[in-house]
Image (cartoon, rainbow, N blue to C red):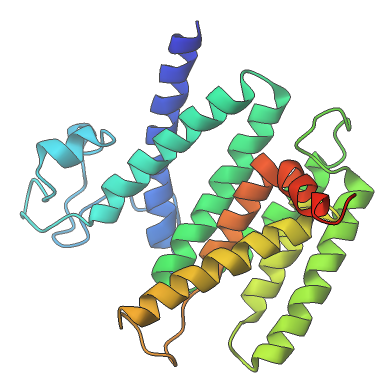
Length: 256
């Protein structure tokens, strides 16, 4: 039975990954996610079912449009693979449980924020505000669902995240934007207090390391912006999965 559900969640993740590619292309441009139907952006031909099978179509077409031979962005394949792997991992981690449902929603949202900010350097209000409302509702669920911090604790986490990032934005003098502040508030709703600090700490550490490597390899100059939303998303994901052990490990250094 475990194998059956593992296959189901992997295929579900791949299928949703295909839809996520549509969201990544259309949401930043303010386009409808429903119309027009999926089509080749180069030649405009409406794609048929054989062109839309996750992963299989990309490989069968060798990364090119069936009709005009224009290259298909490799991101399409990477997203489908990543979301399939993510859904499989979450199923294996949480099993068939209420926590799994919440985790699938949270990680899908965080993954979309990751990809959109990485590609477009935007954290979209059209995602942040509805997501915050949804998380508030989820935080009203029974507290024995371990992945949720509870309603009041979620509000406390959101307040702490917002306050901290307002100070960071002021100190950075334009190095970070209001999108990062809103993202910190969403992190707080998901992680609660003091879990939000674990997520932000992991984001800062991973962001600093990656930025250092990019600068060392001269992939970007010091004045070129590096989006921070992806690291906030990764920090939140890690804190959801391992936040309490990380916090216990850290406090252990001080004898708590």
